[in-house]
Image 1: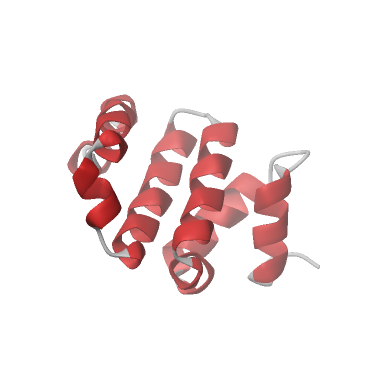
Image 2: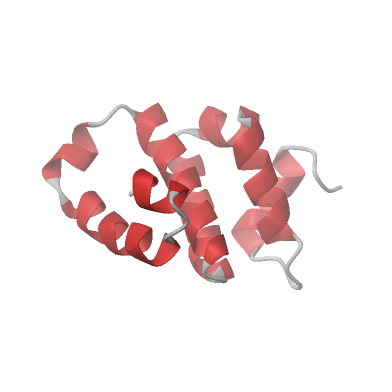
Length: 103
């Protein structure tokens, strides 16, 4: 998934994502790896213009590995990008407040 996203093929990345999270191995990954991966998934959703998908991925990442989302600079950037939507998705608005992007 990550390679496809880095190549700029967000559609392929998201198709691969659906398969990845259905595998048993997904649940065995350390939480911080799953959290970082879900932040990358949120970026892919942004690339295809799916704000709801991006918001879902960020909220899921925060529930799996809060430190990965709240402390990682890339995650903060993605949160800010999604939070700019009007109205910002509720979960992302909460995350933006938690990380100090809004008041």
